[in-house]
Image (cartoon, rainbow, N blue to C red):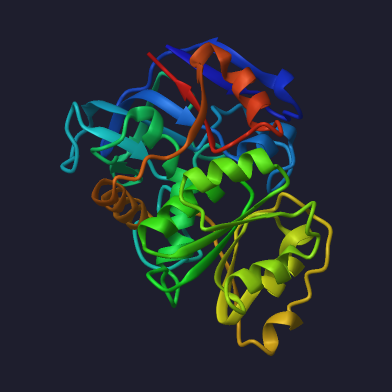
Length: 338
């Protein structure tokens, strides 16, 4: 079979190679998946560059956490799946349900876990979930990391999103657009930021209630608070240290900033702005298999269609990485397999 391999010590896309190797088999308790689509996340760029947790990878790996496909074989003892089922791998292979815990298991696409950018992948039965019936493989491939992250941030906290609540979404990447779509399906009012007026027009078509060009309005946190009637209930914070101060300015009394991203590393991160408002900062690192199942049910019920920006062929994986890192990105980048 064909698979993409990221070499030990990788520091750039030059270390990513398409190789031929034997297809895996389904061992006891495992399912063998014919992969039909994968998607990219910002994490995948960091791994290629050698900047992910722990630095450069210490072994050759198959990259990408997000992949979906069809079960083609099951190993001894498997009862939850059968050949023909449409499934996705879960980001954390050992986090089945419940709140964050100290032992979620390995995360796909980084050592010591397997990765999804191959024609066939074998995964443990409990590291796999059914995908939404209403989605194509390409659409479903956008959800294992970004979609579950958003579900965790908006629907699993102490106060979930719903009618009468407000949500601030930063930018127009994969996590942010899924946050917009899920929040709107839940009945919330959504504000979106971007430096591009053209992208802001596109998010209006996806249902955004208000938009802010942060280059034109540098104090966009205060503007978001004003647009929300005094403060935002939920901030989906994907920027990191460079945007956190503005997100804390935006959040309202009793509100929550869901800390997801690390796109920027320098900035004011002191939490005192939250104190007088009784607001909170909650760290989000993807989620459990049960969260993925709940997300997919909500996708089917509400008819949500994830925003796929561009789809590349398997042989064009390097081009997919380059486009995902470009300023043109709007939503998710997908790699489709025949």
